[in-house]
Image 1 (cartoon, one colour):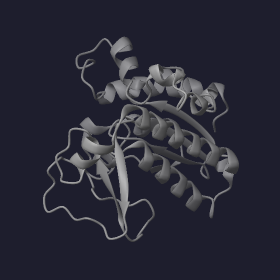
Image 2: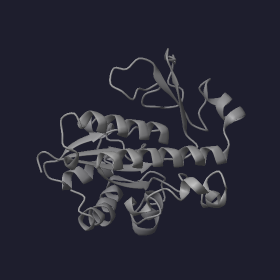
Image 3: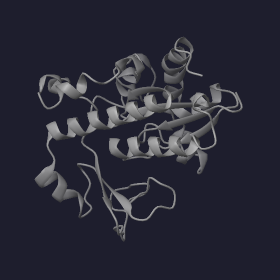
Image 4: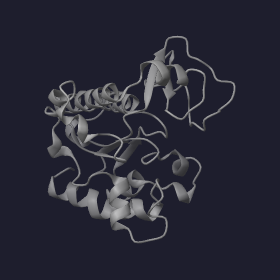
Length: 246
């Protein structure tokens, strides 16, 4: 398995930097436990706290495109945990620079391609940076947010299918999809195109933890390390073994 590569992506539920760089044991997430169970696999994390589904999609596609220059498609595998549909990002050719980190982000603006010019500004509904409020006040709406997320999912699935890359998907919480919009004419045709056979058999990680882990902290929004580990052992690994993922 030494030639095998695992690419994971998501938001704070999936980020690895606080363990890999800062060695904080309270920040061990599901990809960290997963790579430990896949002996010898090389791991690339494209997750970052607070980023939206647009950045998740772009980062996965970019990293896979770069890995395909040195690896065979059959040696690559991808796991994605999508985030809330209400997050947004936009690109500036001349990147904006914030003098203070007023909203607790990891990196904002951020980049997708290594050493690329410009930058992506991240927006979240509750944030206070000056470029955030205009988007949510004047342009954001729930239908559009669902459309964008469905497009990001389909774009990523089509890219991975095109290159013959094995993958699985899931969501961090119930905020990724709203079933109410399944019958909305702007969303339903996109919903019907998603390949749901590639999804883990859970509603989302947050609800699975609340329903399955009878330990202190299970009602917190972000899972604890032991809950991430249980999620890998009881959900992710059985799916991998049943679907010849590696």
